[in-house]
Length: 282
Image (cartoon, rainbow, N blue to C red):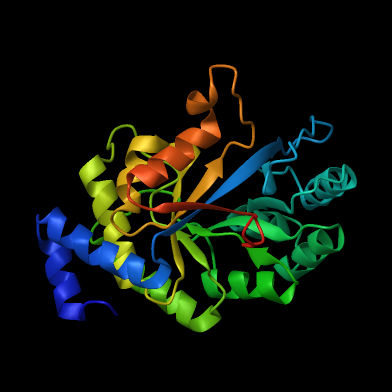
């Protein structure tokens, strides 16, 4: 660990966000240097027959939404893969797949293996706080020949974030296949909104607490350029959900891809594109 457990607890309890951010940035740079990866994702709706439009620039084709059944999930993956996108296909929340398998009274592994047989490469996300059995389910993803794109948090946890990160670290100790962790919640309760200060603190603490996980990720589409840029200076090293549509109708400097690269560069870092397989795009 870049800091001792006692130092980490002290940083978590302190209001000194600058000291915490500096420590997290040092750890991030020790691991990755200035390199900051970003992933261009083409979202495809889960409903059967919905349009499948995947730009050539996409590094991942992601089926988004909750399928109605195991059969519907398998059929939609088959449909999307048959469209032959150049990018690897990812799909679904692992928590939703747990539910589908339970409803069908089938083992989760059966569903995952059928999805893999249809051409799925990655489970799009595993929301740690929604999984019925995180260790077992993540292991099943690996056994089925699939990869997990990222471990996520569905809703803002109550209490000390270090307690949550300790459980995430324990999971990684058991499974050793989590490559990317996104510590900011996918859903925010409007009655208890998060703050930029809290978001930055969670990112920094995640980088320091989770030494066994390679990358800390922020969702560009969900959290926007301002928070993403700050997060990159306090421990994050990967941006998810960058649009693959590079509209230059208002000029190159206003194009979406240029905005992403400019924000990374402005943080003193080097933008490097990757694909869903975690291979760098040259």
